[in-house]
Length: 546
View 1: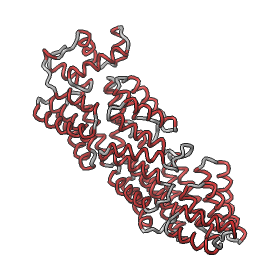
View 2: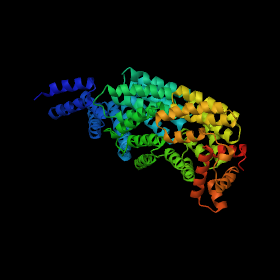
View 3: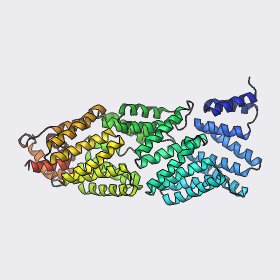
View 4: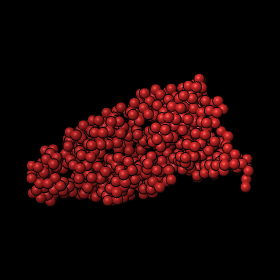
């Protein structure tokens, strides 16, 4: 059997090559023979962290606090007490976490001079403020932590503080300044200057914030970097699930849908994806549901949305859009109204508003759609990122098209289309081409409409977007006034649609069930080859159907 000294040499070598499982096993074995010194206890802590081994993480941190405290090094004891408390917070053990963080504060006070732990405690406050939506206070705490890190020359603290500061600035609408801070936080990450766990935390925080403001180029760039970092550590457990989920999202955006489903499933099955405290499984379920919905696999999509919900993730707006595709428009609208009523953060609302606009217009709730569009414009103006601007432009175009202003609508669609083309998002580009084609048709430009429809069709066929393809094929068929095929009842329902009435109101006035009216509206759309109440109204007036 190897001696403790031999095992420690092997453990340190494994640690240097980032073989975390080997390092942890050898450190445990050496510790069983002779209690580890603080340097090796720190290696044990970081190795356990990269393997997501909570008992080992907490035990190593507790021993480090005691060892440094016994040696009279209250600054280092405070540092490890702070990390101990932070891990307990991540586990949801708030009582014990608070006790350890208070102990860290007392040790800092006992030390009597400035130390890096004061910065880490300020960062705890900054992150708490960020979760509560107190963005300005969060930024102030992050700046305090950054200043302490620079004075104490703690590169981990400096990078993490810049990361949290960047997130707080982005939430305030200072996007360019915030992204610059996030980018600067990445410099020591790329240089391999940070401790292992802090490296992963900076990666994940940065990518999450880039996703919030649709900074797609940055998301792709840093997701690729995170993938390379994870791939260089075959024994890594922590961060792997989140990395795979980020990759799946990028794959979906790029149009690689089947690969995205496979990557989502890998993320959900990763060892670290623990539903009790980690949203990776829920996020993976939602990601897969989105692609299944777009492919027309509605039953499978609904099951995955339900899985996401069971795992604590709000399955919206995806599930509401599924209901819309199933013809259950009022139900979809009611769900999104409920979610929006309890969502305050502007960027979180921005993820719901495009769906609310689409669903409200389908339900005939035009004023509700206008209000959502105005809010989307205000958010795009405040955060001033190109993709948010594209989403707002599309919404404005849909409202203009409803109002019969086809030329203005087409201008908005073209502006949004150019942005999505640069972003490399083929599905969203194809959806915009369908809208642009409808606007061309309203302007009596059938050649222009045909070009847009053909370009969209090739994308839908390649992606397997069956519902969009069916809708497009119906749209592309020329329909003559005498060949519309509407029944007398459908003409009656169409008359009510043109006055802006909702399906519920139409049902009450005609003495029908809402479900029956939903079916009539769906039939009208199919027969007239349109996909919105606005287009149906325009077609009815242009072709004298009323």
